[in-house]
Length: 332
Image 1 (cartoon, rainbow, N blue to C red):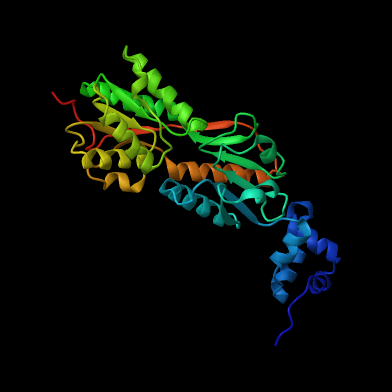
Image 2 (image 1 turned 120 degrees about the vertical axis):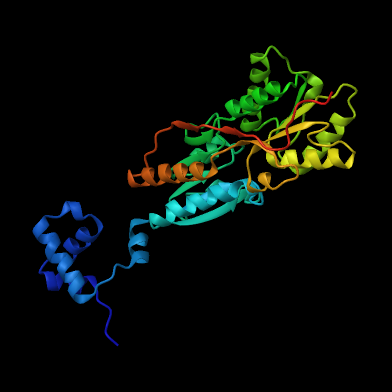
Protein backbone atom coordinates (compact mmCIF):
# COMPACT_ATOMS: atom_id res chain seq x y z
CA UNK A 1 0.00 0.00 0.00
CA UNK A 2 1.32 3.42 -0.94
CA UNK A 3 2.06 5.46 2.23
CA UNK A 4 -0.10 8.54 2.85
CA UNK A 5 1.62 11.74 1.79
CA UNK A 6 2.45 14.14 4.61
CA UNK A 7 2.87 17.90 4.71
CA UNK A 8 6.64 17.33 5.22
CA UNK A 9 6.73 15.46 1.89
CA UNK A 10 5.14 18.45 0.16
CA UNK A 11 7.67 20.80 1.77
CA UNK A 12 10.57 18.63 0.65
CA UNK A 13 9.26 18.37 -2.93
CA UNK A 14 8.63 22.12 -3.16
CA UNK A 15 11.87 23.09 -1.44
CA UNK A 16 10.14 25.16 1.24
CA UNK A 17 9.40 24.82 4.95
CA UNK A 18 6.38 22.97 6.35
CA UNK A 19 5.16 26.31 7.73
CA UNK A 20 5.14 27.74 4.20
CA UNK A 21 3.15 24.77 2.92
CA UNK A 22 0.63 25.16 5.74
CA UNK A 23 0.29 28.89 5.09
CA UNK A 24 -0.15 28.33 1.36
CA UNK A 25 -2.97 25.83 1.89
CA UNK A 26 -4.79 27.82 4.56
CA UNK A 27 -4.20 31.41 3.33
CA UNK A 28 -2.92 31.35 -0.27
CA UNK A 29 -3.29 35.14 -0.65
CA UNK A 30 -0.54 35.58 1.99
CA UNK A 31 2.04 33.74 -0.12
CA UNK A 32 3.86 34.98 -3.23
CA UNK A 33 2.74 33.58 -6.58
CA UNK A 34 6.02 31.78 -7.30
CA UNK A 35 6.04 30.02 -3.94
CA UNK A 36 2.32 29.27 -4.15
CA UNK A 37 2.74 27.66 -7.58
CA UNK A 38 5.64 25.50 -6.36
CA UNK A 39 3.65 24.26 -3.39
CA UNK A 40 0.54 23.51 -5.43
CA UNK A 41 2.55 21.63 -8.04
CA UNK A 42 4.14 19.55 -5.27
CA UNK A 43 0.71 18.86 -3.73
CA UNK A 44 -0.59 17.57 -7.04
CA UNK A 45 2.57 15.57 -7.85
CA UNK A 46 2.65 13.57 -4.62
CA UNK A 47 -1.13 13.36 -4.11
CA UNK A 48 -1.28 15.15 -0.77
CA UNK A 49 -4.78 15.57 0.70
CA UNK A 50 -5.64 18.08 3.41
CA UNK A 51 -6.74 16.42 6.64
CA UNK A 52 -9.85 18.51 7.21
CA UNK A 53 -10.48 17.10 10.68
CA UNK A 54 -6.98 17.94 11.87
CA UNK A 55 -7.13 21.37 10.28
CA UNK A 56 -10.39 22.18 11.99
CA UNK A 57 -9.08 20.90 15.32
CA UNK A 58 -6.08 23.21 15.09
CA UNK A 59 -8.20 26.19 14.09
CA UNK A 60 -10.86 25.26 16.68
CA UNK A 61 -13.58 25.36 14.03
CA UNK A 62 -16.36 22.82 14.04
CA UNK A 63 -17.23 23.33 10.36
CA UNK A 64 -20.86 23.16 11.46
CA UNK A 65 -23.75 25.48 12.18
CA UNK A 66 -26.68 24.83 14.49
CA UNK A 67 -30.33 25.42 13.73
CA UNK A 68 -32.19 25.96 17.01
CA UNK A 69 -35.98 26.07 16.75
CA UNK A 70 -39.00 25.40 18.96
CA UNK A 71 -41.20 22.39 18.14
CA UNK A 72 -39.37 20.74 15.26
CA UNK A 73 -42.55 18.79 14.42
CA UNK A 74 -44.08 22.03 13.08
CA UNK A 75 -44.33 21.69 9.28
CA UNK A 76 -43.63 25.42 8.90
CA UNK A 77 -39.88 24.82 9.33
CA UNK A 78 -39.40 22.16 6.65
CA UNK A 79 -38.79 24.40 3.64
CA UNK A 80 -36.63 26.82 5.65
CA UNK A 81 -34.42 23.97 6.89
CA UNK A 82 -34.05 22.63 3.34
CA UNK A 83 -32.74 26.01 2.12
CA UNK A 84 -30.36 26.30 5.07
CA UNK A 85 -29.00 22.82 4.31
CA UNK A 86 -28.49 23.71 0.65
CA UNK A 87 -26.55 26.92 1.38
CA UNK A 88 -24.51 25.40 4.20
CA UNK A 89 -23.65 22.30 2.19
CA UNK A 90 -22.35 24.43 -0.68
CA UNK A 91 -20.08 26.19 1.85
CA UNK A 92 -18.73 22.89 3.20
CA UNK A 93 -20.61 23.12 6.49
CA UNK A 94 -22.76 20.53 8.20
CA UNK A 95 -26.07 21.49 9.82
CA UNK A 96 -27.11 20.39 13.32
CA UNK A 97 -30.79 20.78 14.20
CA UNK A 98 -31.91 21.05 17.83
CA UNK A 99 -35.25 21.75 19.50
CA UNK A 100 -35.08 24.72 21.87
CA UNK A 101 -38.08 23.41 23.82
CA UNK A 102 -36.39 20.17 24.90
CA UNK A 103 -32.71 21.06 25.15
CA UNK A 104 -33.03 22.29 28.73
CA UNK A 105 -29.80 23.21 30.49
CA UNK A 106 -27.71 22.48 27.39
CA UNK A 107 -28.95 25.77 25.91
CA UNK A 108 -26.70 27.65 28.30
CA UNK A 109 -23.55 26.25 26.67
CA UNK A 110 -24.56 26.39 23.02
CA UNK A 111 -21.68 27.76 20.96
CA UNK A 112 -19.28 27.59 23.90
CA UNK A 113 -19.25 23.78 23.71
CA UNK A 114 -17.17 23.99 20.51
CA UNK A 115 -19.64 21.96 18.45
CA UNK A 116 -20.91 24.85 16.37
CA UNK A 117 -19.37 27.84 14.60
CA UNK A 118 -22.63 29.78 14.47
CA UNK A 119 -26.34 29.51 15.25
CA UNK A 120 -29.57 30.18 13.37
CA UNK A 121 -32.09 30.85 16.13
CA UNK A 122 -35.85 30.60 15.53
CA UNK A 123 -36.94 31.09 19.16
CA UNK A 124 -37.54 34.67 20.35
CA UNK A 125 -38.55 33.48 23.81
CA UNK A 126 -35.04 32.67 25.02
CA UNK A 127 -33.15 34.78 27.54
CA UNK A 128 -31.21 37.58 25.84
CA UNK A 129 -28.23 37.36 28.18
CA UNK A 130 -27.88 33.63 27.61
CA UNK A 131 -28.04 33.97 23.81
CA UNK A 132 -25.50 36.80 23.62
CA UNK A 133 -23.25 34.79 25.95
CA UNK A 134 -22.92 31.87 23.53
CA UNK A 135 -19.83 33.50 22.04
CA UNK A 136 -20.56 32.59 18.40
CA UNK A 137 -22.37 34.53 15.64
CA UNK A 138 -26.16 34.26 15.92
CA UNK A 139 -28.75 35.12 13.28
CA UNK A 140 -32.39 35.27 14.41
CA UNK A 141 -34.87 33.84 11.89
CA UNK A 142 -38.58 34.80 11.81
CA UNK A 143 -38.58 35.81 15.48
CA UNK A 144 -36.33 38.16 17.41
CA UNK A 145 -35.41 39.05 20.99
CA UNK A 146 -36.08 42.71 21.80
CA UNK A 147 -33.34 42.90 24.44
CA UNK A 148 -30.65 41.32 22.23
CA UNK A 149 -28.86 43.29 19.51
CA UNK A 150 -28.65 40.54 16.89
CA UNK A 151 -28.90 40.14 13.13
CA UNK A 152 -32.39 39.05 12.08
CA UNK A 153 -34.24 37.87 8.97
CA UNK A 154 -38.03 37.82 9.05
CA UNK A 155 -41.29 38.45 7.24
CA UNK A 156 -43.55 41.50 7.31
CA UNK A 157 -46.03 40.02 9.80
CA UNK A 158 -48.12 43.13 10.40
CA UNK A 159 -48.27 43.95 6.70
CA UNK A 160 -49.32 40.42 5.81
CA UNK A 161 -52.13 40.47 8.35
CA UNK A 162 -53.24 43.81 6.93
CA UNK A 163 -53.54 42.22 3.47
CA UNK A 164 -55.84 39.58 4.95
CA UNK A 165 -58.05 42.27 6.50
CA UNK A 166 -58.16 44.20 3.21
CA UNK A 167 -59.25 41.05 1.35
CA UNK A 168 -62.06 40.23 3.76
CA UNK A 169 -63.37 43.81 3.86
CA UNK A 170 -63.36 43.86 0.04
CA UNK A 171 -65.56 40.76 0.12
CA UNK A 172 -68.06 42.65 2.31
CA UNK A 173 -67.14 41.46 5.81
CA UNK A 174 -67.43 44.06 8.56
CA UNK A 175 -67.24 41.89 11.69
CA UNK A 176 -63.87 40.15 11.83
CA UNK A 177 -62.31 37.98 14.54
CA UNK A 178 -58.65 37.17 15.16
CA UNK A 179 -57.18 34.03 16.74
CA UNK A 180 -53.72 35.00 17.98
CA UNK A 181 -50.66 33.17 19.22
CA UNK A 182 -49.04 33.15 22.66
CA UNK A 183 -49.23 36.61 24.23
CA UNK A 184 -45.49 36.67 24.94
CA UNK A 185 -44.52 35.84 21.35
CA UNK A 186 -43.22 38.66 19.12
CA UNK A 187 -45.02 37.25 16.07
CA UNK A 188 -48.32 37.26 17.96
CA UNK A 189 -47.87 40.91 18.83
CA UNK A 190 -46.96 41.89 15.27
CA UNK A 191 -49.87 40.02 13.71
CA UNK A 192 -52.33 41.47 16.22
CA UNK A 193 -50.96 44.93 15.41
CA UNK A 194 -51.52 44.26 11.72
CA UNK A 195 -55.09 43.16 12.45
CA UNK A 196 -55.88 46.31 14.43
CA UNK A 197 -54.23 48.63 11.91
CA UNK A 198 -55.99 46.89 9.03
CA UNK A 199 -59.39 47.38 10.66
CA UNK A 200 -58.64 51.03 11.46
CA UNK A 201 -57.69 51.62 7.83
CA UNK A 202 -61.29 50.74 6.92
CA UNK A 203 -62.91 52.63 9.78
CA UNK A 204 -63.53 49.47 11.80
CA UNK A 205 -62.54 48.53 15.35
CA UNK A 206 -61.66 45.24 17.00
CA UNK A 207 -64.42 43.93 19.26
CA UNK A 208 -62.66 42.59 22.41
CA UNK A 209 -64.89 39.49 22.27
CA UNK A 210 -63.52 38.75 18.79
CA UNK A 211 -59.88 38.67 19.91
CA UNK A 212 -59.55 34.96 20.64
CA UNK A 213 -56.56 33.35 22.31
CA UNK A 214 -54.44 30.67 20.64
CA UNK A 215 -50.94 29.26 20.44
CA UNK A 216 -50.46 28.56 16.70
CA UNK A 217 -51.64 24.92 17.07
CA UNK A 218 -54.63 23.05 15.62
CA UNK A 219 -55.90 22.41 19.14
CA UNK A 220 -56.02 26.13 19.92
CA UNK A 221 -57.85 26.74 16.64
CA UNK A 222 -60.47 24.19 17.63
CA UNK A 223 -60.87 25.81 21.05
CA UNK A 224 -61.27 29.23 19.42
CA UNK A 225 -63.93 27.83 17.08
CA UNK A 226 -65.99 26.66 20.04
CA UNK A 227 -65.75 30.08 21.69
CA UNK A 228 -66.63 31.83 18.43
CA UNK A 229 -69.62 29.55 17.73
CA UNK A 230 -71.08 30.24 21.18
CA UNK A 231 -71.12 34.02 20.69
CA UNK A 232 -74.58 35.50 19.99
CA UNK A 233 -73.20 37.93 17.39
CA UNK A 234 -70.28 36.02 15.97
CA UNK A 235 -67.89 37.34 13.35
CA UNK A 236 -68.50 36.40 9.71
CA UNK A 237 -64.76 36.06 9.05
CA UNK A 238 -61.86 34.84 11.17
CA UNK A 239 -58.14 35.37 10.67
CA UNK A 240 -55.89 32.84 12.39
CA UNK A 241 -52.27 33.59 13.31
CA UNK A 242 -51.06 30.36 11.69
CA UNK A 243 -52.25 27.81 9.13
CA UNK A 244 -52.34 25.02 11.71
CA UNK A 245 -54.62 27.14 13.87
CA UNK A 246 -56.85 27.74 10.85
CA UNK A 247 -57.03 24.00 10.11
CA UNK A 248 -58.18 23.37 13.67
CA UNK A 249 -60.75 26.16 13.49
CA UNK A 250 -62.27 24.97 10.21
CA UNK A 251 -62.44 21.31 11.23
CA UNK A 252 -64.07 22.10 14.59
CA UNK A 253 -66.58 24.46 12.96
CA UNK A 254 -67.43 21.69 10.51
CA UNK A 255 -67.93 19.26 13.39
CA UNK A 256 -70.47 21.72 14.81
CA UNK A 257 -72.31 21.91 11.47
CA UNK A 258 -70.86 25.28 10.37
CA UNK A 259 -69.34 25.30 6.91
CA UNK A 260 -66.36 27.26 5.56
CA UNK A 261 -66.78 29.56 3.67
CA UNK A 262 -70.61 29.36 3.54
CA UNK A 263 -71.01 30.19 7.25
CA UNK A 264 -67.60 31.67 8.02
CA UNK A 265 -64.58 32.77 6.00
CA UNK A 266 -61.20 31.74 7.43
CA UNK A 267 -57.70 33.03 6.64
CA UNK A 268 -54.44 31.48 7.85
CA UNK A 269 -50.84 32.63 8.03
CA UNK A 270 -47.69 30.86 6.70
CA UNK A 271 -48.86 29.03 3.53
CA UNK A 272 -47.49 25.63 4.50
CA UNK A 273 -47.62 22.87 1.87
CA UNK A 274 -50.89 21.38 3.14
CA UNK A 275 -52.76 24.69 2.80
CA UNK A 276 -53.37 24.23 -0.91
CA UNK A 277 -54.66 20.67 -0.44
CA UNK A 278 -56.89 21.34 2.56
CA UNK A 279 -60.69 21.22 2.15
CA UNK A 280 -61.49 23.94 1.44
CA UNK A 281 -58.11 25.16 0.12
CA UNK A 282 -56.92 27.75 2.62
CA UNK A 283 -56.63 31.45 1.90
CA UNK A 284 -53.46 32.42 3.73
CA UNK A 285 -50.61 34.89 4.09
CA UNK A 286 -47.60 33.45 2.29
CA UNK A 287 -44.21 33.59 4.00
CA UNK A 288 -41.24 33.16 1.60
CA UNK A 289 -39.80 30.31 3.65
CA UNK A 290 -37.17 29.19 1.16
CA UNK A 291 -35.90 32.77 0.87
CA UNK A 292 -35.89 33.14 4.67
CA UNK A 293 -33.69 30.08 5.09
CA UNK A 294 -31.39 31.00 2.25
CA UNK A 295 -30.83 34.61 3.36
CA UNK A 296 -30.36 33.66 7.01
CA UNK A 297 -27.76 31.00 6.15
CA UNK A 298 -25.92 33.36 3.78
CA UNK A 299 -25.81 36.06 6.47
CA UNK A 300 -24.43 33.65 9.07
CA UNK A 301 -21.81 32.19 6.72
CA UNK A 302 -20.81 35.69 5.63
CA UNK A 303 -20.29 36.59 9.28
CA UNK A 304 -18.15 33.50 9.85
CA UNK A 305 -15.97 34.38 6.87
CA UNK A 306 -15.60 37.90 8.25
CA UNK A 307 -14.16 36.55 11.49
CA UNK A 308 -17.45 36.29 13.38
CA UNK A 309 -18.60 39.85 12.72
CA UNK A 310 -22.32 40.34 12.07
CA UNK A 311 -24.15 43.66 11.81
CA UNK A 312 -27.17 43.79 14.11
CA UNK A 313 -29.62 44.63 11.33
CA UNK A 314 -33.18 43.39 10.79
CA UNK A 315 -33.99 42.28 7.24
CA UNK A 316 -37.73 42.12 6.52
CA UNK A 317 -38.96 40.13 3.51
CA UNK A 318 -42.36 40.98 2.01
CA UNK A 319 -45.37 38.74 2.60
CA UNK A 320 -48.28 38.28 0.20
CA UNK A 321 -51.83 36.98 0.35
CA UNK A 322 -52.75 33.77 -1.48
CA UNK A 323 -56.50 33.69 -2.09
CA UNK A 324 -58.09 30.23 -2.19
CA UNK A 325 -61.43 28.66 -1.37
CA UNK A 326 -61.81 29.34 2.36
CA UNK A 327 -62.98 32.94 1.90
CA UNK A 328 -66.17 34.26 0.29
CA UNK A 329 -68.66 37.12 0.79
CA UNK A 330 -70.48 36.97 4.15
CA UNK A 331 -73.72 34.96 4.42
CA UNK A 332 -76.92 36.91 3.94
